[in-house]
Length: 308
Image: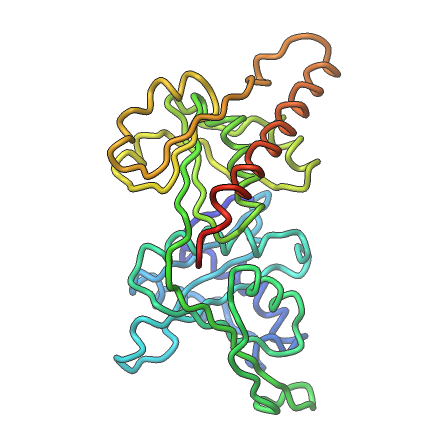
């Protein structure tokens, strides 16, 4: 899945997703389908106010979207925002909500936001599960507050009070195509709230398809990852910078002034394996499993204890 900022041209695709829920569910309390023009106006209002608004695409089709907006327009509520997310009905249950929220939350933590609210028409187990995965806790249950499809509907509110920003972690290798991408994917899967990035000292510009394949086999989707140059992160502050190949480890001293913890965990590069297709496949799997083991130990022993 490719994640990018929403544009006015996305109105039709967003309408296709949203109007299904309008016309067939009580997930939204709107009862009339939104026109493409009407959706463009809504999107424009968010973009004009520089609100984070993202869409996720699969094979050129919008599969989901999420955005941040005001909880209440009274001034005292300025540090409280509401999150909204919708996934295309045909892509439910594939983890896309988690991926979109991980992207959105990286923007949320850059702003002066103290609390997040998610309103959920209940019961809605999948939405509750998604929000609680990111640390939200239920704070209200309003009974029979909406009438839709000849039935009274309950609404609950889930809240996340941001007391501390989760650890910010950069994983480096030379090409940011394979090993660092695998480590990025595994570490993020251990805790979706972590702010995990990866980059390369000589970024290839693409994620290795074999890395995507073997990670998918392990239940982790990294198809939405991008291969990025370390240069764009040089001025940021990091809780951890972790190098996973010798080349990157020798080229990272510039990070030492803004890094709390600098670690090196080296792995063979499976993209350099030669031999039969079966042997090459086995090398990708071996390195993948070594990365998973090492990063789970790192997460359990050093990172997991952070308070959120």
